[in-house]
Length: 175
Image (cartoon, rainbow, N blue to C red):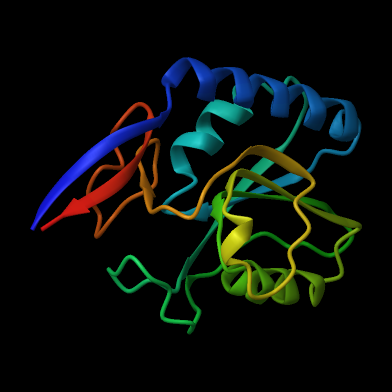
């Protein structure tokens, strides 16, 4: 089987979306000293670019969740491999995710975060594949809505490959 990668969003389109999101987030969080919680591994490039555009005090923490187990389809079981270390009680939390797909992973995370009694909880996602949603997820800050294709690049992967691509591409598998 041969895999072909087609560009869905160029680095310039991604940069423009990240700037737009940073502007929206800045107007909402300027005086709140939020904890920006990155969902690893996929969000790390997006998160780094985003927070460099935010010109107010903030803290960064990370959580590692998984539901793909090196496949291109979610297995439906979510696990938390690395938990956040910050005390979230009474804090403003901004979750940063690379892609929202079925909603299972984020539903799992949001339930955990709500149990910590934050002052507020919002979600920023670069990509939304809403056509695959199984559980509703509200995205407060969204970069792009994408078709039902498996995407890689700009931090997203397929079995740990392609994270380093500067643009977002979709996999086309040919036999």
